[in-house]
Structure formats: C-alpha cells, structure tokens
Image (cartoon, rainbow, N blue to C red):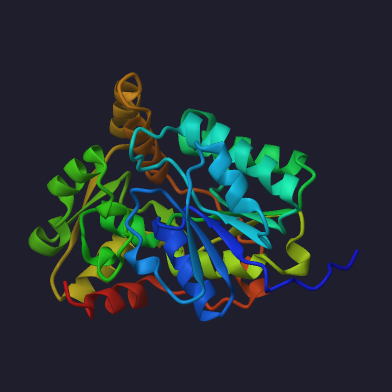
Amino acid sequence: MAMPPADNRRPVLVVGASGQLGSRVVQQLVALRRPVRALVRRTSKVDHLRLTGVELVQGDLTDPPSIDAACQGAGAVIATANAVAPLHGSSFAAVEDRGYATLMDACKRHGCGRFVLVSVPVTPHDQAVPLCRYKRLIEQRLQASGHEYTVLRAAPFMDDWFSLIGSRLPARGDPAALINRPWGFLQTFMGAVGKLIEQRGMALVPGPAGTRQAFVAVDDVACALIKLIDHPSARNAVLELAGPQWLSWADVAEIYARVLGRPVRVVSTPAAVFRFQQVLMRPFSQAASNIMGLNWLAARSMPVDDQGTAAALGLKLIVAEDFLRAKAALAP
C-alpha cells in the first residue's frame, strides 16, 4: 500500500532531544527546515537546541501527562532516549520499560506519524545486558502496538567508544557528548582513563586487539533516523546500520597514531574482567553494571547485518579517520 505524502508542517517530536544523538537529530532537522518539537527535561542543558524552528517542551518519559501533551499534533516521533548514563535517579525500568510504554500509548492515542526508534543489534547475550534486554522489549511492544514504526539497530557509536578507550578527542565540539554527562560513575571512569591516548599513547580496550566492530558516527545515525521518517520501504520494518569499515581495536589505535602523530599501543582488558565487574556491580547500580556489560559485549565482535541500509537511504558514511581528523582540527 502506498504511503500518503508526509505532512512536513507537523513537527517531528524528538524524545531524548538533549542527549548526544537526539541533539544531532534536532540540528539536522533544523538544517532541513523541518519543524521540530524537542522534548527535554526541566534540568537539561538546552542552549545548543535554541534554534529557529525548534519548539522546546519540558517533559519526561516518567511523567505521563507531559508525554501526552508533547505528542499532540506530532507528525512523526524519533525516540533516542535511554538510561545508559542516568540522571536524577532515572532507571531502565522507569525510562525504557514504563516510559516507552507511555510514549507508545500517547502516540497511538493522538495519531502521531511514524514512530522511529533507535535500538541496538541483537546479540546472543541480550538478556544479560540491561540496555539490550530493554531495547528488545521496546521493539516487541512497538511491533505489537498497531502504530506505524521503524526500528533502526545501529552499530556501536565511534563518538563514544573512541572516547571510552582513553580519549577526549571525539567529544570536541559536541555540547551533548555522552562522556560529559554528569553521572558520577562515568565521570570517575573518564577521570581515570580520559586522556590515556593523548598523554600516554595507550588505548585501553575491551578484549583482544583484533576484536572488530563496524563503528558508525552519531551524525550518520541521526541522518538515517530522519530519512526513515518518510521512507516508503521502512514502514513497519526493522533495519540495521553498520559503519563503513570493520575496524579492530588495533586499527583504531593506528588511526589515532596517524591523527596525533605519535605511537599508540593497545592495552587489552580480558572480557572476563568486565563480566565479573558487571555481576559485582549489579546489586548496587544497574546502570554501572550495564556499562560493564556493554564492555563485555564490545570485547567480542558484535554482529551487525547492514542489509544495505546506508545505500538504500542514500547515506555516504563517515570513515573513522576522517571523523577523528575533523575532531582534531577543533579547539580543545
């Protein structure tokens, strides 16, 4: 069945608009001159979102009345919110379970356009890692909702993983960089490893140096999500987006070495260490346990079946070296 033409006069509701990916979605929508409704928490930093064509609305996935109000009149929804680096006591159960259920109900009630969800690739260990487990739950509910949807399972973000192995370079020029979120556990971790590559020529990676990932840039994921709002073949589809190269950690270290003009060596942390830390932290902090679980997954190659998604959407994906060189050209 052919889809009716998209109504570009109705705003695109971006849920998680103040986050790293959500901010890029908002900025790219503005560049395309599409009206945007950016859902942000009352305490979020939003100066970078005060752009012509952006309607800032305060709300929270844990606050059903605010979600209901935000959905009224929306022409499409792009949902990027997650509980990976939680603030103000948010949790996976509150955000990814009850919060997304509330959002789906409100979208269906108000006849919002297509619901575009960013998710993560399927792994054999989804049930062991909260982010993966909850994304599978959201996907299943969305598919059963009767509301039009598209799910995009994106490969690991180079913006984040190139930082987490010991560098602040990828965060340059990004007002919403994940590694700058004021979550105590994350800031303690980055305080310990944040400049290992720049200052000591050391990349502290999860798993063997030969472990390969199809890293993708956040800008490319944002672009894909926007294109999926209207793409006819994406109706009620689950798609995967891989980066343009499968890179090992050793490859990433070599790219850093070329960009920085100094040797960078790989220091590997065995996967078992992250698994042990994940289990150890679980009773005290699900979010911290989740981070260790993601590192445990990153210690092995994560399967991503690109399915030609980038080509179908007309995307020219950013390669890792170009990404890092562009960051290096910015002021620290």
